[in-house]
Figure 1: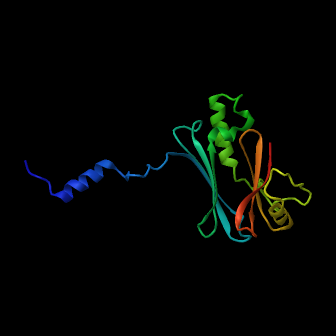
Figure 2: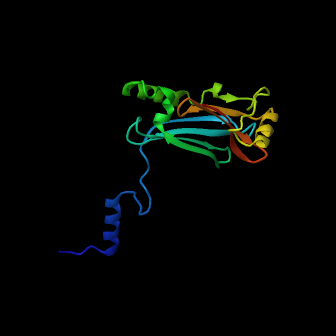
Figure 3: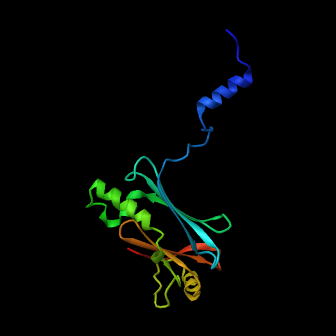
Length: 176
């Protein structure tokens, strides 16, 4: 029996093992995604808003909302269960209806009406469960600040905006 040279044997093992490198997990199975461009952290240069569902099925997957700014830096990331996209409807829908609802929510997640300017209306009242009052007032007083409103979890609506003073995304509004 002819021996393979070490290099050939090592190459053969790498090919059989695929792209998986020890200590790293294989890439997640992307089931559904939506990408939108919108001004947010900068009044002129758009940021990339990404919503990705990964997992084995839409009903048992994970949804990740990520915002990448115009220079390529991640400025926001939130992950939850895809069931959280159903809100209070999760208990009353059939599996087929849940799947259709998740698909529809992803399709419309970055619709224009979900972006607000100013981020916080002058008539909006501060709620102690929100971010700290100083940051909230800074964002509210900035008429150029853009907010992004989205629903997640059981009857919850979230609002986020870019705090120019703190150089980060902050949650400024939510309701239960």
